Length: 535
Image (cartoon, rainbow, N blue to C red; front, side, top):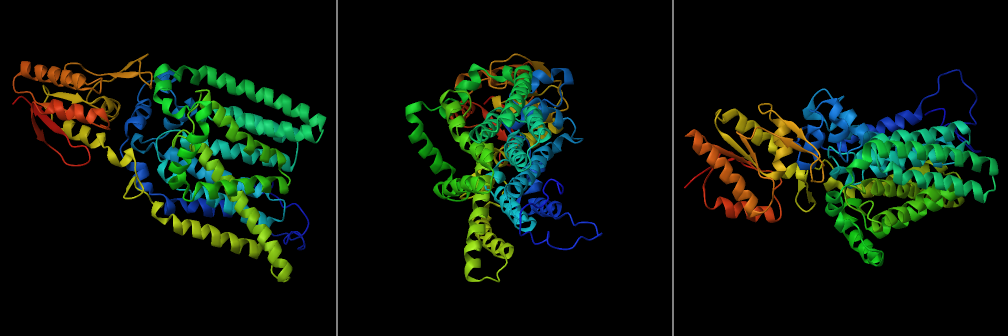
């Protein structure tokens, strides 16, 4: 990094100093290390790494338990590279360390974006990088996305590709263009949204070189784009395409607005997203626009075009019912990208304010003035959003996430420690994946294909585990009835009930069905274990 981010431009404070034989201080690496060191200060790492896996995480974690040959099926909508990385974690209770890794990489990529965009000296460039990295680090939505899902990788790839685009513009070469194209191919293994960002960055390079009539470069961009497209398509068709299903389309239907509904939909989502941006969306968008202007002003037009192409692309995909539009999870990469570009805009405004101030106070160093303005503004943002930092998943007035609302792990461990050999366990629909992951007592088999959003299901011993495969009262009563019948045939066997992520109509279904039985609560907590028996 230190070589690629070498100072360019006239007026660099360090460039004017005499050459020294002493080894150069790697200020860029120090700056990135300082940002990464703040992650434990900002994030509640204990909760992030040790909380039990909830529904959407449990099946991802469970995929690690199946043989490697089943991975093309069990990876489902998760990029296969992400699933492979999870298998490298020694302790399966700490799989979210992969999520943490990509959080850190995203902060580093944001620093690189701000640093590579800035055309001035090393010191002011480092300030620009720190502001951009801090904008991503302190973004409230980063506190919510602790899931064992690829969303943090989505953010890293998006910001990373923009940084590589700026790097390519900074010192054009076929090698750099080739690295960008290769990064797109590799990115597809850990982030399917690479297929959304890649056309934007390649389109930005294509349009910028075309406007400048740099025909030789235009051919190089076309060839690189063609190669990247082939690689991305190969990864998608081989590993990801099978995850698209009618069940998945139905699940995301609310995030597929019609063309005429887009203005109202964007306004509605904008109001809902204010909290996770940590500032009014209108202010964030203004800084985003300033960031785009800063890209152009600092000689990075292709990066600016790439950023401008992203909104119409994601809107088009939403209207076309290809990719959910502005969902908190699946659009996380968009929110982080917007924050990174807004950080560039903030740095650009600070640099402009410092230049104006220098006209009045001629002895005021540009770097100090810029850093002071940035420190005040970033500090104000951090203070305003301080309640988000070290978010444990459930904070009054902020947000309650499934990580804090569910605990199938403790239920499973308690039941396995206390159930007799002839006892029967009843699982709610959403508890099946988690129970299968945390229970080492019951054999688990793979059922595929299966007509849910995941595309596969778990097969457990029918004589000891009954899974309620529906959410309505009829399904719940049927599951309880089967379990009680099995227990009755064995004389004295108990029926243990484990429920997880019970929401919506399922709440009423369980209340109504259990009203006809004797229910004894065995544990406390967010999701208590109960024993069910006939009255």
